[in-house]
Image (cartoon, one colour):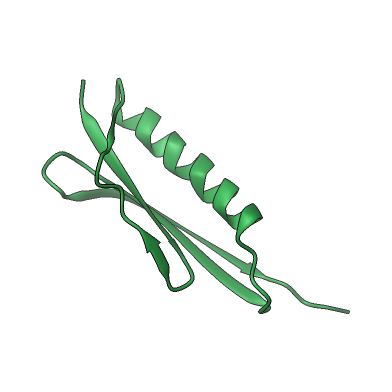
Length: 77
């Protein structure tokens, strides 16, 4: 089973996945990255009005095989 590593960046904070996890196929790692990205964006909203989040999936060769970016802008009206 292939091993993938999911790194998350929330603003200036980077959480590098040094352990990884085994997924039956790439699509499962991709889905986990997207789900994690959504969770992180809900939990780590800062005081500012603009927030950026990135999830990157690396393979066993340390090559980034997928990257998703989420940008959130909050406007007070």
